[in-house]
Amino acid sequence: MLDQLSKLWNTAFGSLPPEVIVRAPGRVNIIGEHTDYNEGWVMPGAMSRSLYILVSKAQPPNPLRRGSRSTESLSPPLPPNTSTSLSNRGGSKKHHWIAADLNEELQFDHLENIPLTQSIWAKYILGALHVYENDLGPLHIMIGGDLPIGAGVSSSSSLVGGLLLALQRLTGDQKTKQELAQLSSRVEREIIGLQGGIMDQYAIMLSEADKVMMLDCRKKTFEFISASIPGTQWVLLNTKVKHQLIDSDYNQRAAQCKQAVEIIQKQFSGVKSLRDADEDMLLKSNLPEVLYRRSHFVIEENRRVHEMKAALENKDAIKAGHLLQASHYGLQYHYEVSCDELNHLANLANQTDGVCGGRMMGGGFGGCVICLVADEAMEMFEKKAMDSYQKQFGFEPEVIHFSLSGGAEVIGP
Ligand code: GLA
Image (cartoon, rainbow, N blue to C red):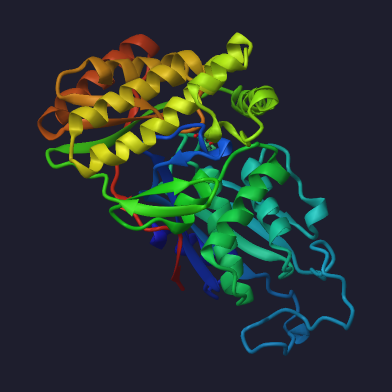
């Protein structure tokens, strides 16, 4: 994979290798959905499928203009008092960004002239450059890898987090991975406009191999636990659909949770977010029916994260499966972020012998179902899922086997 990207790099940018290469993994989540922006708990991990991000500062067109600020830097020296605005330090060098998997590229002089059109990936790159606030001038960037895009494994956060890590390496500054994760979630909220939490960014930046992270999204503290239960495997089934509703519906759910908190606070002033609420408070607050269902789901889902921790520690596959089933039920009927394709695969998982349980994963409205399956049932379940999904929807889902990897890392040059 990386070999192919390196060859492409040479073709596009000549034989000078990239100054930094980062591997940024995708994100899986065992349980704890739509709890992160409610300051609750989540249990994500980084998956073995990754995005690779290759970056260099753009070369000046005329070698005589090379500066002497650093032995490594090929940028022209900056005059004193030069503005640090992202858009005015490029000189005549050009930004050149390539999304290898999508076969797309963009070239332009200044960030303000970026031809955005359909290129959502470029918007994420732009967002990362904005929040980083340490301008390096025009960049050569190439991205590619084996992480499925639009499958609910957070390829966008992987791109942003990975690029921020690359920028940190290029600038040599001291930001910690936790700071980079927080910057990364600002891109999502402030630039892209998705009112998300911190789950994806923390998992992508800070995960440990073979572990999942139990993350407290209010305190921003976490511990690592093993998600492996002997005799079983975690697997993803990718519906290969992404319904366009996601952004507006996601933000609407976040807004509904906020509204619910405002109502609950009238009687229970100590409630700062749904993390602090319980069922009794919901009943006494006379919430409108929809807000009641949303809040009730969040309270139960937070509880399930803690129960899942105990189930994993006890290696109790049956209990873990029941928690997945209950989570999917709540996401489908109470939080209403599922869709027919996800329901089909989750219901199949929850009705098949040898499958402990399954549920939709991530923001919803498409993407993947995560399932816990007994080793001996895996082959049969995969076939059953393929056949019945094909029959129902006219195309096959993708089965994604994965291991849990470490977080984003600099791997080269
Ligand atoms: C998306 C968001 C996360 C989280 C999940 C739902 O992946 O980016 O912050 O809210 O949805 O759990």
